Length: 215
Image 1 (tube, helix red, strand yellow):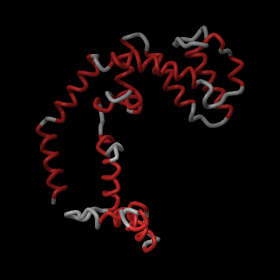
Image 2 (cartoon, one colour; image 1 turned 45 degrees about the vertical axis):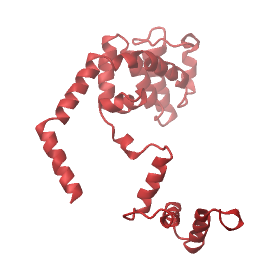
Image 3 (tube, one colour; image 1 turned 90 degrees about the horizontal axis):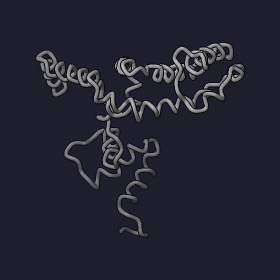
Image 4 (cartoon, helix red, strand yellow; image 1 turned 120 degrees about the horizontal axis):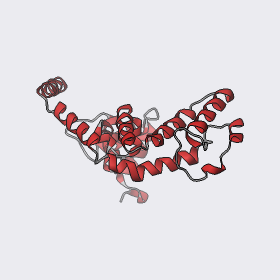
C-alpha cells in the first residue's frame, strides 16, 4: 500500500496518464506495468493488451482460427455461418426428410436483409406460400402456424418471421444437429479433412510457412 492508500501500480498509471495524454488505454497500461513486471523482450502494446485479456478469461484469437468440421462442432450457429457446413447439413436433413427446416431458416435470414416495401412483400409472400400456408410445398411444423394468414403480408417488417424462425432453429439445435455430428456425412468429411491436413503436400507447406515466420 502506498501513500494515501493507493497501490504503486495505480500511482504509476495516474502518472503515465498525466504525462502521456496522447496514448491509448492499452499503451498507458503497457507503460505503467513495465516497471512492475519487466519483460525479457518488450511486447507491442496491442500484444500486451491481448495477453491481459486472455489472462482474464477472454477468448484468445486462436479460437477464431477453427474451420471446417472443427468449427461446425462448436455450435449450430457456426455451422450455419459456413456455406460448406450448410451444404452438408442440408444433405443430412434431406435424408431425414426435414430439409425444409434449414431452408426456412435460411429464407428468414435472407428476408431480414431485404430493402423496400414491395420487395419485402414479395419475399414475405414467397416464404409464407412455401413454408407456412396450409398448401405449402415444404411446410414446416411450428406453433402458431394456424394463426398466420395472408393479411400479415401487406405490412411486412424484417422480424415478422422471427418467432417462427427461432422455433425452427431450436428444433434443429436440440434434435437434428446432435445427430448430424454423429452422422456418416459429418464423420466422413472430418476424416477427409484430417487426411488432407496430414498429406505430404500439407506438411511441406506448413514447414515452409514456419520457416518464413521464424526468419
